[in-house]
Image 1 (cartoon, rainbow, N blue to C red):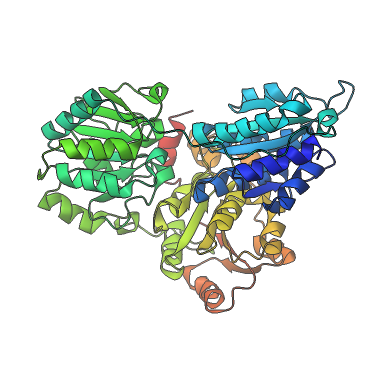
Image 2 (cartoon, rainbow, N blue to C red):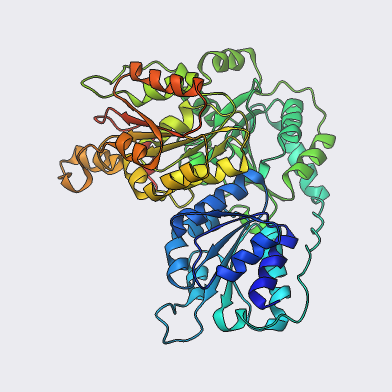
Length: 541
């Protein structure tokens, strides 16, 4: 067994079950070794798509995924997806070949590239260390929630590995939260009259613990965008905090006298640049890592610990029975205005263009409730993010830490692979759809019963609405309409073009059929107004 084979088999024995990639000469043997060891291999059409598919798969499955790349250009092609995953702390191992001759056209400083985007670089420098390095790469990804770029130099790959493949390292024990911190948080909850919990990525999987504690102290429940759906069905669920928040949610969060972030960074997006947190409100942050506490904004109390363990410990220390923020007035407000589609609006459709709110609300009614929604970046993104409901925190995949346009389709593919029991829905703008169009073939090849919705406003809408009001020329950010339905049919999709709500009848027909081909909805949307969240988004630039 050579080093390439030993590394591939070790990663699978450690727990990697799915690897996504584009195979070249440099990663051919390592990839085949992973497949031979039992991993599922998914071929992408572009390395950038491969990285994002693996990222989304890891997020939705809760496991460590792998990406397999050729040396040099394979890694550079994947860097945007790797950056998104690194910023989101996705547990991912990037297995990449590495040129060993400085005269090679493939030679780049792959360690520097990994470090530059926030990933952890590792390298197999000798055959005798191959198993140990591969095992450490997996453990770092899993236990520290990091993206690890594992470099396999070409000359080392061919050497004979002295030992057999490794096995999975033990999962380290989670330390108990400090008793003083537990007491301080319990006391803060006991004093609060209007507490709000904001749960982030680190709170996924702990709905029961947080809902139990919230009930004992009368707290309302909200999430960051990436944890959307965590409290779905709870009568005190506010849905998302931040730029996507409904008017009633924003009002209630801003009225809180205590805000507790559970596995949540409380960054500028989740707090609307701090404006959702009232002056004088007590702010608490709970996180596994001490370095995360107060990193985005000052906090009055930071608690280091696992979200579930802290919630259980604090629950045992809270008296319980407090009404808190759970009043009859709040119950009535949430009953009437919990969702964005409960807010009245003037339909902006007409002249062959459909209002994106009307479009998305109609799709929400048509599509099965058991869905997984993936959203690309752009002016349109608030509509599918908030008008398409999701069943739980595994129903929404939001690869937007890096705010890159073009990741949406690959995100939906990765999410679909992780959740084959649900209808995958990809929501894209016209710009992102064209950037990621190579993966339309991947959807068809994999037989995914996906619904792809393209919100076509014939331009980069965010820039149009940001710069247009000031009279700037917009020729660089406007384009002719694209026939996305024709492009999709060329790849083997079924497709419908929507210019008014009645055109969605074709979606109903597809849903009623065998769904043996994916469906693309080419929605020509009204383009004269910015989405409600856009002004908030540009505050961060």
